[in-house]
Amino acid sequence: MPDITMPKMGFDMQEGTIVRWLKKPGDEVRRGEPIAEIETDKVTIEIEAFASGILTEIVVQEGQSAPVNAVIARLDGGNGAQAPAPASPAPVAEAPASPAPVAETPAPVTPAPVPEAVPTEAGEIRASPLARRLARDHGIDLRQVRGTGPAGRIVKEDIEAYLAARGAAPVPPPTPPPAPAPVTLPPEPAVAPTPAPVTPPPAPAPVSAVSPAAGAGVPLSNMRKTIARRMLQSWQQFPHIFVSIEADMGAALALRAQANAGRSKEDQFSINDMVVKACAGALLAFPNLNASYSDEGIIRHPTVNIAIAVALESGLMAPVVTNCQDRSLGSIARETKRVVALAREGKITPDLLQGGTFTISNLGMYGIPEFTSIITPPQAASLAVGAIRRVPAFKDDSDEVVAKHLMMLTLSADHRVTDGAEVAQFLNEVKRLLEQPLALLVG
Image (cartoon, rainbow, N blue to C red; front, side):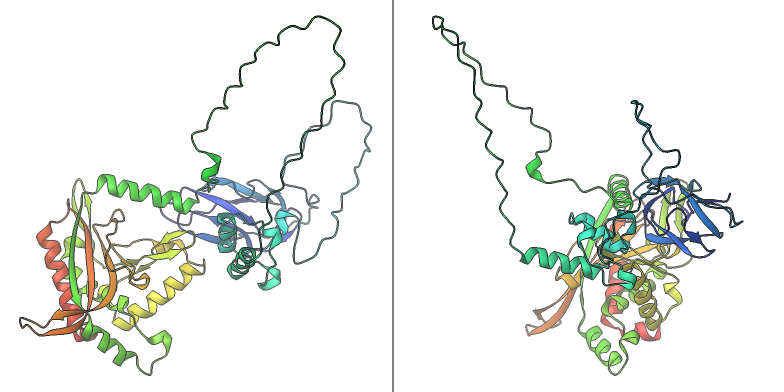
């Protein structure tokens, strides 16, 4: 009987969590067919069966974690052996102590028919990993959501529509608990009245550390646990140095508008793509910022692999654009679109999240003019990119005031690897490339 084990989908992967089983005991499984969705510390992805057969046992249930190479399910090997009837994954209770008569062969229990669009069994609910996370974060019962995806699968848009409908519907006031029924006491015996003893008021119930009024806790996903662990490690162990500079983006905006005119959206490049290209050139000139610290010395990386921070509902993900030092601006733009789309669709693979040597985080689309970022271990630096602001400024050294498009760049660097002067020189080189953007096209 072949075993299905937790696959290793990344160099540093230690365990995975079963998000959802796509098959149930008794189902036929073909080699290469998706069998389950698992969540690692980086990504949620479907795993495929490496053998054909009948699924006979689910060892690790939905919501449970298992280390790499641990058995999570078993097949009969496809040799024609009869698989047991599907059973609930919950453990079967022991027989009752009272000698209740039971039949030798219990009749199979057939669940009552339910509408196809709203299944009642949790294992029958088809939903994307993103939709499940969104439902969990908002406390939504997936059985109440109608799926519009393939085969009735619940997708992100269905959750958002449910939230919109729920927000528009009036919330009924809470029903007060029924008043306790009056208690009739038996008549007291005819005796001389005695003063009733004074009963002290009951002691107040102990207050928990977290008041229920503060709200219910949200379980941490593997991704959020990893973000918390790595950011805490970076902040505690990496002595950060922060240096900022403003770049005049007028020429870059004009070049981008001219170059993108008449091109398809897939072939256009963004300001962030120009920042990536400028950083790639500057990192070649200042290799200490494309490096990692170790007790044996500074490790300078031979290639420039830039991680692009992408905000998702489940947390922050940073897919990597590799070999940026050899890519044209158009190549950087196309590869960035590809890996970012995979991240947002929940289809990214672990290899696209590894090997970054430098990180760029851009909050300009949110209107944030300036911020600082935390270095991602084991990298030595991270660049925070703010919004482009049209502001009045002096022209060169004259008193003439003109409109300029300024963008703030803030570098967070590991002070063990570099110093403020080198960081300043690096930022000035990035600034020069952005203010003379033709160099990005011919470089």
